[in-house]
Image (tube, rainbow, N blue to C red; front, side, top):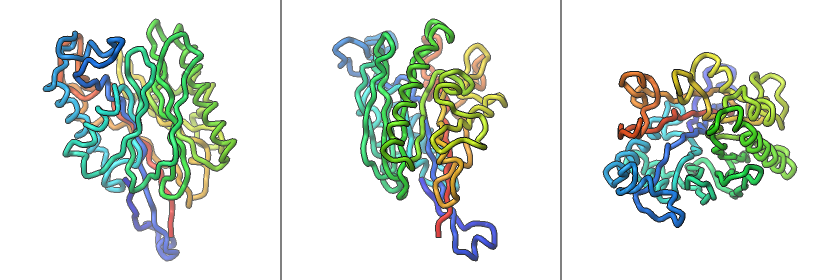
Length: 337
């Protein structure tokens, strides 16, 4: 999760300074339902052994193992036991999150689970995993999006201390593009307004808290919800402490995305940072890198899907993949004595 490294410059070494690095990731788990038909409204019927997907124990545990393995590969030389925080979406309940973190590939990380049942019409929620060695949980609030004419995911705001510095992570899964991007855009604009309102409320209480808005936003960085409503800028220079910087805008410009549809890449899986995590002193957590974790093993190798995320199902056929989205991660660093 966090590594302490010797600073390479001689002057920094002589001053006794080291670098700490922390990763913060997001991953859409693409309909991770258990196999039990336990939703009173039948919202999970599709993902049961007798449902349309014929979703049985073998398929479920294969997907759970796949996701655990994928997350285990988030580890880097500077974050040898993975990200400090991982936001997730498209999960049915707390139990499926616990099944993933208890897999052999992840169990040694001791990831803790934050979950809340949302009123979503499909029965999916957002959640958050964190490593208690590096992130101390202070509180969780859940915020309902009432400005849309249907039931959707609540926004989860998790507040805590990342090695002594307070941050808040707002985990999102904004309304989809069903009906078309333009027709459905007002729903995501409303979601962005809610995220911005949560951030503003956090800053009224603690002006110094770093705020991260993450999730499957169902919009790209240049779209109105992100660029105008959140005000997430393409360039970090000049972003105010209580403004936002979007490091994914230039990634998409270069042709890198997290999901593809009809040969068109989108980058919906974003991690957007407040200005006080971007333009700040080096002894505070400070953004320095963003990555789409498009590992080769996460990619489909077949036909016209080649290079796209290898999903669980395609056109009704079971593929045994990971997710229809690639995960994303940002890295923060700071100098310490």
